[in-house]
Length: 370
Image 1 (cartoon, rainbow, N blue to C red):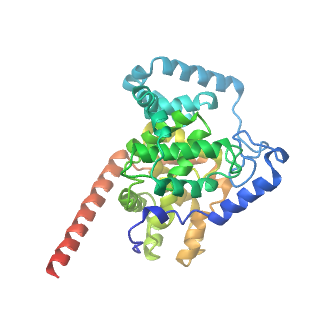
Image 2: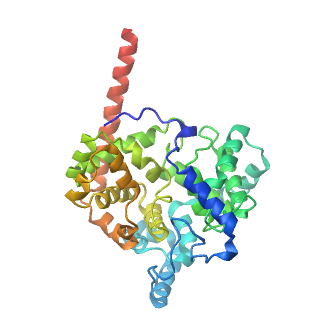
Image 3: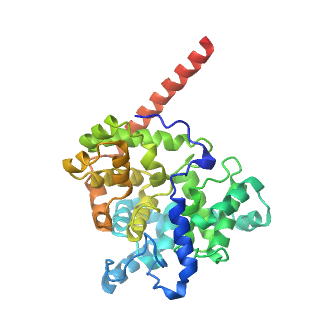
């Protein structure tokens, strides 16, 4: 694999399509929300806008039954998690009903209980000014976060204001790591579903429990998981692995945004929500599974590989997977079909940790010899 070198936190997200974000923001300001139909998720256009005529609909009867089941689980949450977790997992895989999704995410990730244990702390964070280095960076990035969503369209939007407060609060809560640009989309998705304080504690859970060290200086955890993903790709899709290895395609070139933003900038919106439902229940292994499925969908036949003679075509293929292949049911079904177990992931992770330790030791010995 080609060596991408150490990632630097402040500029690690040059992969974000700034031009596209700015174009979308300009379109939103020019047209105004009132002149365009808002989809059920709040988007007024852009790549993640959902055409009402094309979206998958669940019958009200089925939806109501699922809501009742979730409400019952909330009443007896510890019992369900301790004794009937498999059923909870199955219900997350089917999709959490929109009316209870925010509550479901908070129960699953533990942020509800975290907030209860830290009453008043978020408000205390808001009273503090924060480190100007981080607050300046946060302000510069606000316009990038879903500019075609009604909550974040325009600099004076309440969504952007709350987003700034959440991200600033996190830099005070965790001054060692501070702010990383990839936290913006994560926090924005949470804000679309819940009030700012609840979204903040959800963000804390994601950063510290689900994706620990992902947003730390150097982003070493992301680099390791890129190597883990490449190792798992060899198991699940050896032909694709061989192609990527031959072209020296470093995993960081395509998986960084996938993993750090939990696919919130990659998939159709209904699919993003289904992936997040599973992610909050099952953890980071869902991110790995979805990534393996996307690689498989991008190169679904030998002909698609022959159409990519260089690394440029290969990366373009990964960046522009046809949206019809990213149907939520297809993606969820394919993740469950993968012959990759949690044990496989743990072994590959330990393998890459050991390999990195050997590399680091070798580097230190070379420096001493000089």
